[in-house]
Image 1 (cartoon, rainbow, N blue to C red):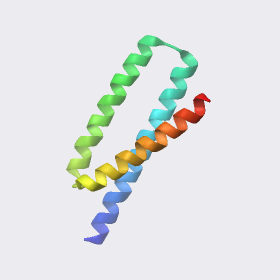
Image 2: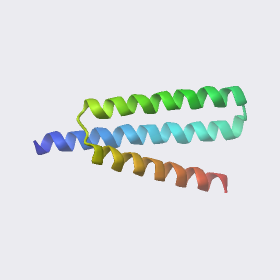
Image 3: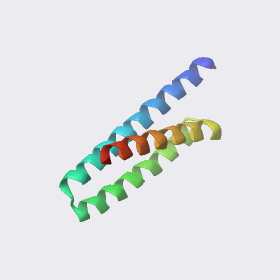
Image 4: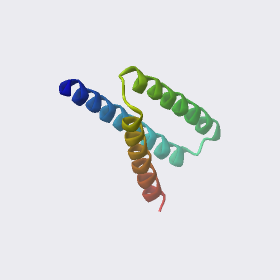
Length: 87
């Protein structure tokens, strides 16, 4: 049982790390290119990807507490890095 829990946490960490890197790459690209249509398409695609992650979190059996922990951590890191890149 503990091995299954550890595996679940590893997948959550890897998934949200990937989502974080994609988000940061997206912000960097949008700040350099300054393409408004591309910005809309990228944000729409990113929201779809986040929705998929919500589905996958349920599929692997993550509890509400675990999902909240990883989502809040993901958002905090994304906001801090994005904020620092614009200063």
